[in-house]
Amino acid sequence: MRTLTLHNPRRKNALGADGWAALATELAAARDDGTRVLVLRGTGGDLCAGADLSDVGPGHPLARMRRINDVALTLHDLPVPSIAVVDGVAVGAGWNLALGCDLVVATPRSRFSQIFAARGLSLDLGGSWLLPRLVGMAQAKRLALLAEMIDGEEAHRLGLVSYLVEPAEVDATVASLVARLVAGPPVALAQTKELLHGAVGLTLAEALRHEARAQAVNLAGDDAAEAFEAFREKRPTSFTGGWSPDTRGG
Image 1: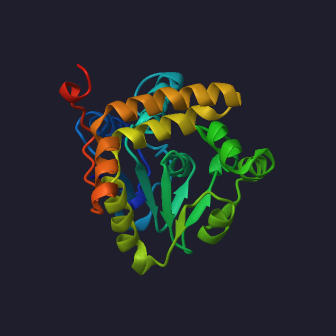
Image 2: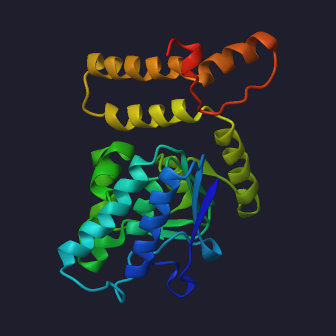
Image 3: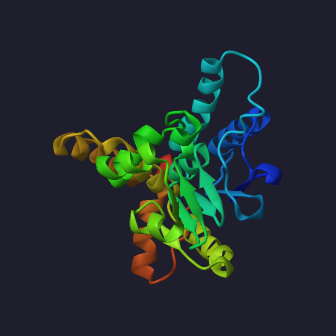
């Protein structure tokens, strides 16, 4: 497991130029270093209040936005499951960071807002792509155009929060999810993420072809065989994501 903790408590963990750069580096490392689960959280419970507009860094605004976009793309493309933890605010780009994760654990006192319109801005960090897919166009327009602040309970009702728990239960809930995901088959989980992300806009026939290719990869690896043996022997599975070509014809 890799835990990334955003730390700028004076500004509710808003990200300045250095913060975006550090987050991009850490996400890239999680993609390549054998991490099995990524947890994203912030100091003091707040996840992130968005971009720190007092610390935007040098360069043309479009160039700066491209660097921020790299964070959204890297998070989206991570082959490992990701969990966002919110026990405070997640607004603007900070909320879209959470929505870019696979699971969101929040509390009733959490607060969420697509704050952009209130700041004279439009959506960024993938909000225009994520929101309609998660809640439909009508609710996406409501959240984006009105910049409303909603609490954890409403976010959970809308399907924008995976688990709503009391503050005292956050760490135990996250630990349980991490344990379950780490115990899962890493190659199969990565392919499931990719299938789900790519399914929007596909025909059923196209989705089935992608599923068939992914399943062939799973069946060529060690984890599917391990699952069968564990089932036959009535024991827990031990998934590694490995592949043994010598036992599968080269």
